[in-house]
Length: 336
Image 1 (cartoon, rainbow, N blue to C red):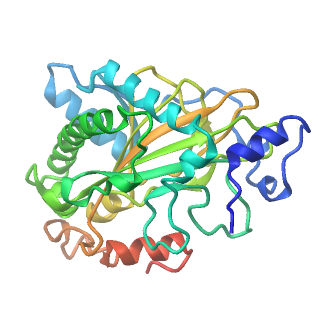
Image 2: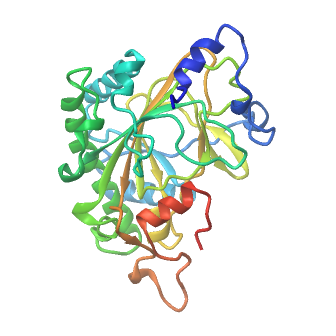
């Protein structure tokens, strides 16, 4: 059975100024109705090159407690490498369908790696205006190159270089967050599986949509991961839910957007927030983003860190093997 890709639907829809019914959101989700139009509070921005390390640590911890999202600048990932990463990803999505389908997620696969369209079950049976590509980039033992594009030829080299930089940045941030909990610097990294933790690259491709007022690129969700490090292209679209409103996130060139995911929420026993966010789409331009999800390996059991639990601070979350947590969440099954 051939799967219809949103990129193809976009190409045919642009002539009609209409979109298929399954992409039209209910009024409680439509961005034109639900996006806040007043003064927008700024998502925290942290300059990691600030020589005052205590100030940097306080800013990261405060943003993670209050927002669950922040942007980092001067983060050590070369701007030129980010541009190359975006260039090879964009080139892949501009290839003919047959080339993209050569790395498609198999229909019966239990894993999410590969080129695809639908990711999770939606309550109202709606569809998101996005195609995607997933593949692990670290550790080398879990990389499956059959899901990495062969074209453009430099795709592999760029992604392998990016993996080393994104790993280093994530470990810096996890160290700060661990110490913010009063724990050893390695505590959260170990809670996510240490050297066995996996880095999953995703490329989101949101083609032009004739009715951006009615559709969503990705509906409201929190990330399954421990932490997510994302670089977007210049087309805005990320929205964050805070204080009962949906706010647009500012685009800062070369910044990395950091999301606190479900597993850090659970390991910290609720001290750090997992950010609720969604993506809108543009009428004329393609939005793309490159999140890397730092996740526990499948069998890793994740729950509140024992060092944080006491009579006065009982566990708020039930421990789950990551594979079971992911399955339950993606299929909208209870998590308590």
